[in-house]
Image 1 (spheres, one colour):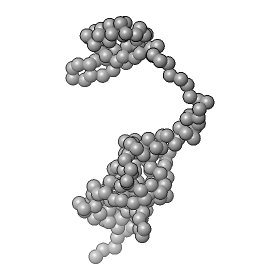
Image 2 (cartoon, helix red, strand yellow):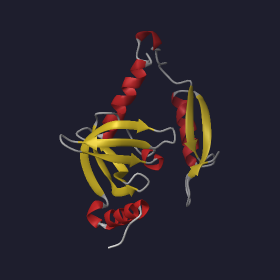
Image 3 (cartoon, helix red, strand yellow):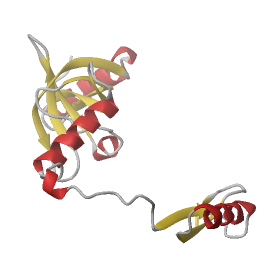
Image 4 (cartoon, one colour):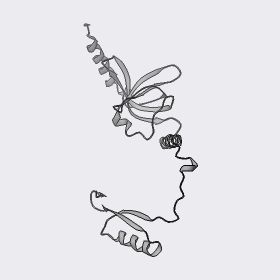
Length: 180
């Protein structure tokens, strides 16, 4: 037995926890509390159940991939690895993915967007405009020299003349992409 420094003890505990395979890549179910969305893009929060809680950190790189916006009191499934923030001697779950529990991610994202747009008044009747019966301008992304654009132009001239906005793209080959 030796005498540990505080840093030495925290480093030792971190090594023990991070080398335990059962604590790496795990799912944890709980409810979000104490959510802080830092300006760096990182999220700091706890997930809790009826009798316990665990601290979590979700870095910006993970948060950019989320299809919904985590909120306080939201029930979630969190996927991550147990780690130790040695500066504070605090263990935490380093989040790699978050999913709403009981509601699909896309549905939750849709509901959040709908709520935000409604709060902005964008669903109010005075903001609604009638759609034209036929479009005046049509955008097409395809090869400028291929058969597809010629077919599209031919059909549109026959059925409904409209202005065509062509965005030439590479549609074949190893790396098809929009040419900017």
